[in-house]
Length: 279
Image 1 (cartoon, rainbow, N blue to C red):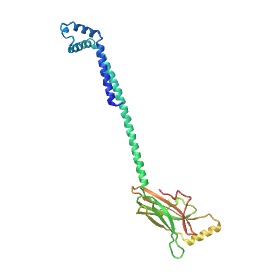
Image 2: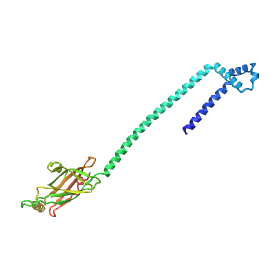
Image 3: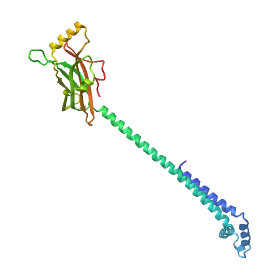
Image 4: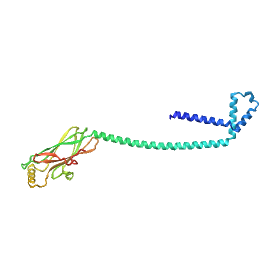
């Protein structure tokens, strides 16, 4: 219900209540006695039909009614004030409860707004961030002193993201084992190269990872192991490239490749996705 209509109805009921009380007063003995005495006054007959006279008589007799019943009227008024006070207290208490609920709702809305803003910011960063991807790894022999070429690897990577990447570290090593684990990298601090270079969105770069293994020796070793049916061991390239986005958040791209010495090719290790990853 509109507030204006509600106020109009309340005031109308109030006026009707007051009018009803005044009309009920005319039925009281004190009012009737006053009315009869007033009509016996000598001047009454001269102005019986006067509108002012009727109003005057009504006011005087209502006053007589109030004088005769002032104790009861005071008690009723006191009771009405008490009821009004109780009603006002309950309304105030209810209003306080509603205010507390509104405050709680506002707090929850604030929390939700903050979460939505955080989600939106995270989504924006996820959509507008760099992402390094290892494209391929070239076999990179380094000619030495006639004892065979030192086996190396040139890692090619591209920023496939939407913003620039600042490369801060390349940590990689080539080692011999039957399988590769992250511990093989973390226990080898000698392969850590600190740097500070920028890679634009869509741009590519490469890095050579050297080793102490020679191609002639590895080829002979593989042939001997094949004749002896010994457990297979080979050369692995494991590493990670760490970079930062424009917000300063550090991210990693991992790589794990193994060498086919016969074909002189580096191949991605497909059974270890935890080592080949993009953050």
